[in-house]
Length: 305
Ligand SMILES: *[C@@H]1O[C@H](CO)[C@@H](O)[C@H](O)[C@H]1NC(C)=O
Ligand SMILES: *[C@@H]1O[C@H](CO)[C@@H](O)[C@H](O)[C@H]1NC(C)=O
Ligand SMILES: *[C@@H]1O[C@H](CO)[C@@H](O)[C@H](O)[C@H]1NC(C)=O
Image (tube, rainbow, N blue to C red; front, side, top):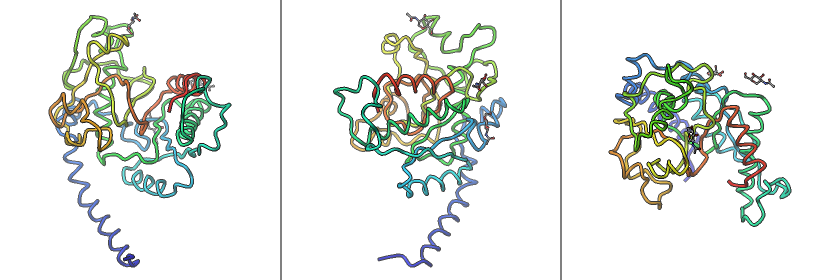
């Protein structure tokens, strides 16, 4: 049965009322103790709560004919008070084979994946062309928690253990120092991180290429897998984060095995670490340097989607 316009208006009104009723409560509950800890230390960065989440711009990739997704994301962005810039998606038919990175021969890549590849490259190209300092790139089906801004405050604090040097340590971040000292299997609670030099370029730190904020699976660093890549295995632990979904939902897709995160940590734990073997590009931020590196690597050298 079709809804009559009056019914639809009523449902929308009910929805708005529900949101209004829910909003103050979720604000109070924002990410519990970790956020409280940042507030007491006055380590919150006002920029992260701005309309572009502390990045210079937010881009969203969307095929213009998927107006449904554009509508939904427009509403979600308005509710979260963020402003986005659209990047037109590309359909696979528009991608000429001769434009693919040189190693594409023999790789069976679907038309859809070719289109998605090109759209991401176009986003990176725009960031490089306009010399944008930092940008967040979203896919149009990305979804987020209403407490996103509070989550990012906490994330930034954790990220700076990797991206920002500690005073008196020439160029070394906490993560690099632990690695240089040969410390193993390293985990540190967010409220036990050392003080870092305040960043100048980005509230997430001045030395990073990519921040992988939205994925559907990742490899948690261990002593051995980090040694083979020569990367830090620091894990910054955020306990009691009530924005982390229950363990049964922590999986790449409904039929996947449970994520390592759910196996290794108690419920409501979030972990910030070096990203590796990630799946899905729902949301990632790039610095200008990161955008240049990605465009070179995946625009010209290596074909992957
Ligand atoms: C938000 O903060 C970032 C980092 O300082 C800045 O580049 C960006 O322009 C700000 N966004 C808005 C809408 O003011
Ligand atoms: C790009 O931005 C950087 C940092 O703000 C600046 O040093 C550089 O001159 C800019 N490049 C261009 C071509 O404008
Ligand atoms: C491993 O990484 C550290 C820190 O980034 C660097 O100083 C060192 O030279 C690297 N070692 C090798 C073998 O690449």
